Length: 291
Ligand SMILES: Cc1cc2nc3c(=O)[nH]c(=O)nc-3n(C[C@H](O)[C@H](O)[C@H](O)COP(=O)(O)OP(=O)(O)OC[C@H]3O[C@@H](n4cnc5c(N)ncnc54)[C@H](O)[C@@H]3O)c2cc1C
Image 1 (cartoon, helix red, strand yellow):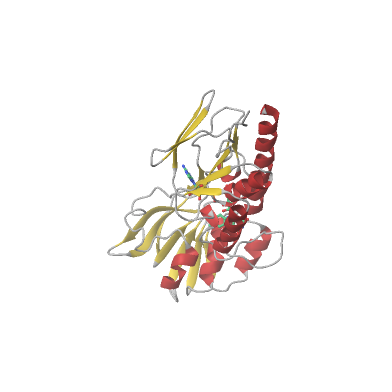
Image 2 (cartoon, rainbow, N blue to C red):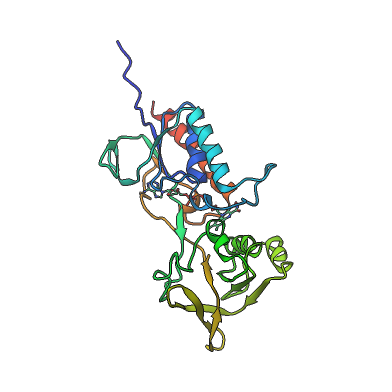
């Protein structure tokens, strides 16, 4: 009797950031038929536009894009099938059903949710209005527009410090606007401290982004005293954390959530990759047990 054909999408991976790319590659190396979905047309997720990725435990200097392309090539070499479309819907019944943005249906046996997150917004007047006219979420992409000018970086975590370090090589002055003590790694803070063109506005939060045709200043409020002030600047780069994607996190043993999409995620790229690999192993064991 002919053996039934193998399901061409045994494992579906949603999201091609570091977690999803690593998960897809590893599951395929374990012999699984893997389909990887990416909605943005850009591989590498949050780090796709980072000029130099820190904290990698292997030699060499990598941009986020180069590392993502490397992971993608590795994944494709072992047979991962790419679908350049968002996953619009996932239903977990007896038979799982996944629908992409073009309405195509897939029936995976295990799903790895690696949908990551997006940069949190300040949520103040002017932020959206001046996006692309002084407000930017990518130092590597837009830093060159601020050569010799004054930019403000909002936030005190590793992402903010990373972007401030990039900007300090281009801008005349960088002001870090921090609401609370910095949470970034000591090593990163020390590097920033050593830059002569970086200064700090402590205990300060942004209440509005102001300008005419483009950004000219920020309205600030001191969180301890309530005092209002204004900071003249040409550019604003908010990096105040990541808004976790909560899509597709169904309570089902066939669905694994990894990386920045997972509540309690540690934050670094290498952790995202490691979680992707662990989830691929778990999905593989699950499918072995079901056969
Ligand atoms: C500014 C900044 C700098 C950073 N620098 C570093 C650094 O130097 N070193 C380091 O180790 N870490 C760094 N990080 C942290 C790093 O970005 C994260 O650890 C990592 O990106 C998490 O990867 P992820 O795959 O879980 O999520 P993400 O990178 O968010 O990837 C998720 C992917 O899923 C896709 N997606 C979402 N929804 C869908 C859907 N419905 N269908 C299909 N696809 C979907 C998204 O388009 C995205 O490509 C930085 C973060 C920021 C914000």
